[in-house]
Image (cartoon, rainbow, N blue to C red; front, side):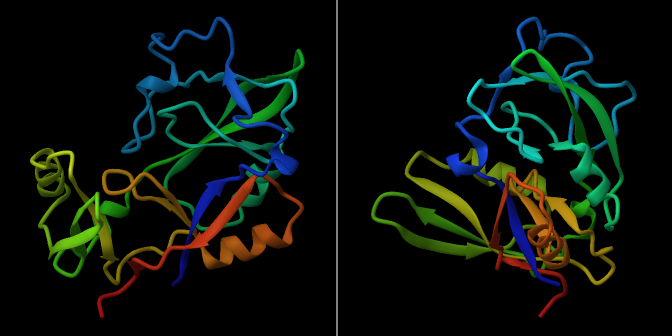
Length: 219
């Protein structure tokens, strides 16, 4: 099964201005119900609050960009209905407050649980240690857990980094149409089927690139 990175468009002809959004005045990030208190690993036990506004020159696309650290995607009613046709991880759509030129728009916070880590075949997943200046791959290695990966990252100096070369998922992976590689890489992935159907639709605000490191069964 082939996957593609699902990115937010930065084409000004599509989005009007970049970034499209900013925090709504009066939105308290320290509020216990704010997005700061929502994590990728579970559905919150409260109704989260998210208040943003589009900048004056921005266009209201189907998918909006988000505030830093936001766990999810900001989608309009049409994209919400579209996504519900696909195989999604455990999720919820929360109505949120989005304003543009003092008008309230109909958007949702699409929050889904990042459960793909349960299906990672760490024995066959491969990482690369690389030098940043005068780029060079120094070492290929495997890990036994995400915790081991983070320990290695903490031991690096500023001259070196770690990246995925190949990530393999077990045969029992449910073939979700959307996943996020949080804890390994901060990107969203969409299945080829979801990508094709989105590109055929009139929905706006997204971009795709094939994500070759992901393999859905060992080879």
